[in-house]
Image (cartoon, rainbow, N blue to C red):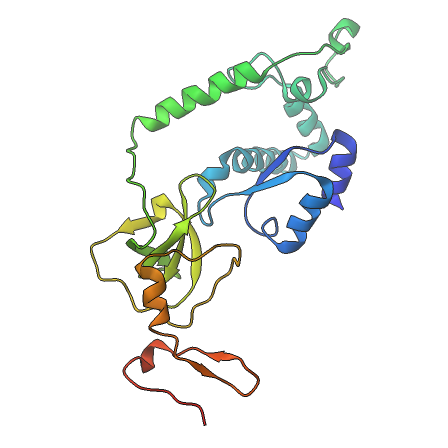
Amino acid sequence: MNLKSIFARHGIPEEVVADNMPFGSREFQQFARNWNFSVTTTSPYYLQSNGQAERAIQTVKGLLRKAEQSGTDPTIALLQYRNAPIADSTFSPAQLLMSRNLRSQIPASANLLKPKVIDGRSQLQHRQDKQKAYYDRHTKQLQPLKSGDVVRIRHNGKWVRGVVWNKHHAPRSYMVKTQNGLLLRRNRRHLIHTAEDSPVISTPFMDDTSEAPPTTAVSQTVSQTEPNCRTRSGRAIRQPVRFQDYVVTVQ
Protein backbone atom coordinates (compact mmCIF):
# COMPACT_ATOMS: atom_id res chain seq x y z
CA MET A 1 0.00 0.00 0.00
CA ASN A 2 2.90 2.39 0.65
CA LEU A 3 4.24 1.97 -2.88
CA LYS A 4 0.77 2.31 -4.35
CA SER A 5 0.37 5.62 -2.54
CA ILE A 6 3.73 6.86 -3.86
CA PHE A 7 2.95 5.73 -7.40
CA ALA A 8 -0.47 7.40 -7.28
CA ARG A 9 1.21 10.67 -6.29
CA HIS A 10 4.27 10.67 -8.56
CA GLY A 11 3.41 8.14 -11.26
CA ILE A 12 4.56 4.58 -11.95
CA PRO A 13 8.32 4.26 -12.53
CA GLU A 14 9.79 2.26 -15.38
CA GLU A 15 12.28 0.47 -13.11
CA VAL A 16 12.66 -0.09 -9.36
CA VAL A 17 16.16 -0.89 -8.05
CA ALA A 18 16.08 -2.47 -4.59
CA ASP A 19 17.52 -5.19 -2.39
CA ASN A 20 16.13 -8.71 -2.48
CA MET A 21 13.64 -8.95 0.36
CA PRO A 22 10.78 -8.35 0.13
CA PHE A 23 11.33 -6.94 -3.37
CA GLY A 24 12.54 -10.29 -4.71
CA SER A 25 9.47 -12.17 -3.48
CA ARG A 26 6.93 -13.74 -5.82
CA GLU A 27 4.21 -11.43 -4.50
CA PHE A 28 6.19 -8.30 -5.36
CA GLN A 29 7.08 -9.68 -8.79
CA GLN A 30 3.38 -10.14 -9.45
CA PHE A 31 2.73 -6.59 -8.23
CA ALA A 32 5.38 -5.31 -10.68
CA ARG A 33 3.72 -7.15 -13.57
CA ASN A 34 0.29 -5.80 -12.65
CA TRP A 35 1.58 -2.23 -12.45
CA ASN A 36 3.85 -2.57 -15.51
CA PHE A 37 7.32 -1.79 -14.14
CA SER A 38 10.53 -3.82 -13.94
CA VAL A 39 12.40 -4.80 -10.76
CA THR A 40 16.19 -4.98 -10.57
CA THR A 41 17.54 -6.53 -7.36
CA THR A 42 21.07 -6.08 -6.10
CA SER A 43 23.46 -8.88 -5.15
CA PRO A 44 22.83 -10.19 -1.61
CA TYR A 45 25.22 -8.85 1.05
CA TYR A 46 26.56 -6.25 -1.41
CA LEU A 47 25.10 -2.99 -0.12
CA GLN A 48 27.46 -0.98 -2.27
CA SER A 49 25.48 -1.87 -5.38
CA ASN A 50 22.50 0.02 -3.92
CA GLY A 51 24.65 2.84 -2.58
CA GLN A 52 22.39 5.68 -3.68
CA ALA A 53 19.50 4.45 -1.52
CA GLU A 54 21.82 3.55 1.39
CA ARG A 55 23.36 7.04 1.32
CA ALA A 56 19.92 8.67 1.32
CA ILE A 57 18.83 6.57 4.30
CA GLN A 58 21.99 7.49 6.20
CA THR A 59 21.45 11.19 5.51
CA VAL A 60 17.82 11.17 6.65
CA LYS A 61 18.68 9.19 9.79
CA GLY A 62 21.33 11.76 10.63
CA LEU A 63 18.85 14.60 10.21
CA LEU A 64 16.24 12.93 12.42
CA ARG A 65 18.83 12.10 15.08
CA LYS A 66 20.16 15.67 15.21
CA ALA A 67 16.63 17.09 15.31
CA GLU A 68 15.82 14.86 18.28
CA GLN A 69 19.01 15.82 20.11
CA SER A 70 18.38 19.54 19.58
CA GLY A 71 14.66 19.32 20.36
CA THR A 72 13.59 20.81 17.01
CA ASP A 73 10.86 19.75 14.62
CA PRO A 74 12.19 16.94 12.35
CA THR A 75 9.82 17.90 9.51
CA ILE A 76 11.46 21.34 9.29
CA ALA A 77 14.84 19.62 8.98
CA LEU A 78 13.53 17.48 6.13
CA LEU A 79 12.05 20.57 4.44
CA GLN A 80 15.38 22.41 4.55
CA TYR A 81 17.22 19.35 3.24
CA ARG A 82 14.87 19.04 0.27
CA ASN A 83 15.26 22.76 -0.44
CA ALA A 84 19.08 22.83 -0.29
CA PRO A 85 21.11 22.36 -3.52
CA ILE A 86 22.80 18.99 -3.95
CA ALA A 87 26.60 18.96 -3.78
CA ASP A 88 28.21 19.78 -7.16
CA SER A 89 24.80 20.84 -8.47
CA THR A 90 22.80 24.06 -8.63
CA PHE A 91 19.48 22.30 -8.08
CA SER A 92 17.79 20.98 -4.94
CA PRO A 93 15.92 17.66 -4.58
CA ALA A 94 12.63 19.60 -4.67
CA GLN A 95 13.58 21.27 -7.96
CA LEU A 96 14.62 17.97 -9.52
CA LEU A 97 11.36 16.32 -8.46
CA MET A 98 8.79 19.12 -8.81
CA SER A 99 10.61 21.82 -10.84
CA ARG A 100 10.12 24.42 -8.12
CA ASN A 101 11.48 25.56 -4.78
CA LEU A 102 9.48 24.89 -1.62
CA ARG A 103 8.27 27.73 0.59
CA SER A 104 9.95 27.44 3.99
CA GLN A 105 10.46 29.56 7.10
CA ILE A 106 13.26 31.42 5.33
CA PRO A 107 11.82 34.52 3.55
CA ALA A 108 11.96 34.19 -0.23
CA SER A 109 10.70 36.17 -3.21
CA ALA A 110 7.51 34.97 -4.86
CA ASN A 111 9.34 34.76 -8.18
CA LEU A 112 11.69 32.11 -6.74
CA LEU A 113 8.72 29.90 -5.88
CA LYS A 114 7.26 29.86 -9.40
CA PRO A 115 7.58 26.51 -11.21
CA LYS A 116 10.30 26.26 -13.85
CA VAL A 117 11.06 23.09 -15.78
CA ILE A 118 14.71 22.13 -15.38
CA ASP A 119 16.95 19.31 -16.56
CA GLY A 120 19.44 18.46 -13.85
CA ARG A 121 20.36 14.98 -15.07
CA SER A 122 23.58 16.16 -16.74
CA GLN A 123 24.88 17.68 -13.50
CA LEU A 124 24.02 14.55 -11.51
CA GLN A 125 25.62 12.33 -14.15
CA HIS A 126 28.80 14.42 -14.08
CA ARG A 127 28.86 14.14 -10.28
CA GLN A 128 28.48 10.37 -10.40
CA ASP A 129 31.12 10.00 -13.10
CA LYS A 130 33.60 11.97 -11.00
CA GLN A 131 32.91 9.82 -7.94
CA LYS A 132 33.33 6.68 -10.05
CA ALA A 133 36.66 7.92 -11.41
CA TYR A 134 38.00 8.49 -7.89
CA TYR A 135 36.80 5.06 -6.76
CA ASP A 136 38.18 3.22 -9.79
CA ARG A 137 41.71 4.45 -9.07
CA HIS A 138 42.01 1.86 -6.28
CA THR A 139 40.18 -1.02 -7.96
CA LYS A 140 41.00 -3.70 -10.50
CA GLN A 141 38.87 -5.62 -12.95
CA LEU A 142 38.09 -9.18 -11.80
CA GLN A 143 38.14 -11.97 -14.35
CA PRO A 144 34.64 -13.14 -15.36
CA LEU A 145 33.52 -16.64 -14.39
CA LYS A 146 31.83 -19.30 -16.47
CA SER A 147 29.55 -22.24 -15.69
CA GLY A 148 31.41 -25.09 -14.02
CA ASP A 149 34.17 -22.97 -12.43
CA VAL A 150 35.02 -24.00 -8.87
CA VAL A 151 34.90 -21.10 -6.44
CA ARG A 152 34.95 -20.35 -2.75
CA ILE A 153 31.87 -18.54 -1.49
CA ARG A 154 31.30 -17.05 1.96
CA HIS A 155 28.21 -18.52 3.63
CA ASN A 156 27.31 -18.37 7.34
CA GLY A 157 30.73 -16.95 8.19
CA LYS A 158 32.68 -19.71 6.41
CA TRP A 159 34.32 -20.02 2.99
CA VAL A 160 32.75 -23.09 1.39
CA ARG A 161 33.38 -24.68 -1.99
CA GLY A 162 30.89 -24.19 -4.75
CA VAL A 163 30.41 -24.37 -8.48
CA VAL A 164 29.25 -21.55 -10.74
CA TRP A 165 25.80 -22.60 -11.91
CA ASN A 166 25.30 -19.79 -14.41
CA LYS A 167 25.59 -16.02 -14.77
CA HIS A 168 22.80 -13.90 -13.36
CA HIS A 169 21.21 -11.32 -15.64
CA ALA A 170 22.36 -8.54 -13.27
CA PRO A 171 25.88 -7.14 -13.89
CA ARG A 172 28.77 -9.01 -12.19
CA SER A 173 26.35 -11.35 -10.42
CA TYR A 174 26.48 -15.16 -10.45
CA MET A 175 24.41 -18.09 -9.26
CA VAL A 176 26.63 -20.52 -7.30
CA LYS A 177 25.74 -23.98 -6.07
CA THR A 178 27.49 -24.92 -2.84
CA GLN A 179 28.62 -28.35 -1.70
CA ASN A 180 25.53 -28.44 0.54
CA GLY A 181 23.25 -28.10 -2.47
CA LEU A 182 22.24 -24.46 -1.89
CA LEU A 183 21.86 -22.21 -4.91
CA LEU A 184 23.07 -18.75 -3.88
CA ARG A 185 23.43 -15.48 -5.74
CA ARG A 186 26.58 -13.47 -5.10
CA ASN A 187 28.49 -10.58 -6.61
CA ARG A 188 31.77 -11.39 -8.37
CA ARG A 189 33.58 -9.57 -5.58
CA HIS A 190 32.44 -12.21 -3.09
CA LEU A 191 33.68 -15.18 -5.14
CA ILE A 192 37.22 -16.59 -5.18
CA HIS A 193 38.12 -18.66 -8.22
CA THR A 194 40.17 -21.70 -7.15
CA ALA A 195 41.91 -24.67 -8.79
CA GLU A 196 40.26 -27.17 -6.43
CA ASP A 197 38.34 -30.22 -7.53
CA SER A 198 34.65 -29.84 -8.12
CA PRO A 199 32.76 -30.56 -4.86
CA VAL A 200 30.29 -33.40 -4.46
CA ILE A 201 26.93 -31.65 -4.17
CA SER A 202 24.27 -33.20 -1.96
CA THR A 203 20.55 -32.48 -1.53
CA PRO A 204 20.24 -30.08 -4.47
CA PHE A 205 17.98 -27.14 -3.74
CA MET A 206 17.19 -24.32 -6.12
CA ASP A 207 15.82 -21.08 -4.71
CA ASP A 208 15.12 -19.76 -8.20
CA THR A 209 13.37 -22.21 -10.49
CA SER A 210 13.81 -19.88 -13.44
CA GLU A 211 17.54 -20.59 -13.56
CA ALA A 212 18.30 -23.35 -16.04
CA PRO A 213 21.08 -25.82 -15.16
CA PRO A 214 24.28 -25.56 -17.19
CA THR A 215 25.43 -28.24 -19.59
CA THR A 216 28.83 -28.59 -17.96
CA ALA A 217 30.38 -30.77 -15.30
CA VAL A 218 28.09 -29.21 -12.70
CA SER A 219 25.05 -31.24 -13.73
CA GLN A 220 27.21 -34.36 -13.93
CA THR A 221 28.38 -33.87 -10.36
CA VAL A 222 24.82 -33.40 -9.16
CA SER A 223 23.49 -36.44 -10.97
CA GLN A 224 26.07 -38.67 -9.28
CA THR A 225 24.49 -37.85 -5.93
CA GLU A 226 20.90 -38.52 -6.96
CA PRO A 227 20.09 -42.26 -6.84
CA ASN A 228 17.06 -43.52 -8.69
CA CYS A 229 14.99 -44.02 -5.52
CA ARG A 230 11.46 -42.86 -4.87
CA THR A 231 8.98 -43.11 -2.02
CA ARG A 232 5.54 -44.73 -2.36
CA SER A 233 4.07 -41.30 -3.11
CA GLY A 234 6.54 -40.83 -5.97
CA ARG A 235 8.82 -38.29 -4.26
CA ALA A 236 12.47 -38.64 -5.33
CA ILE A 237 14.96 -39.49 -2.57
CA ARG A 238 18.27 -37.67 -2.84
CA GLN A 239 21.26 -39.21 -1.18
CA PRO A 240 23.03 -37.06 1.47
CA VAL A 241 26.74 -36.51 0.97
CA ARG A 242 27.61 -38.49 4.09
CA PHE A 243 26.18 -41.60 2.40
CA GLN A 244 28.06 -41.20 -0.88
CA ASP A 245 30.08 -44.40 -0.24
CA TYR A 246 26.95 -46.47 0.44
CA VAL A 247 24.07 -47.80 -1.64
CA VAL A 248 20.70 -46.66 -0.33
CA THR A 249 17.64 -48.73 -1.14
CA VAL A 250 13.97 -48.23 -0.36
CA GLN A 251 11.92 -51.25 0.81
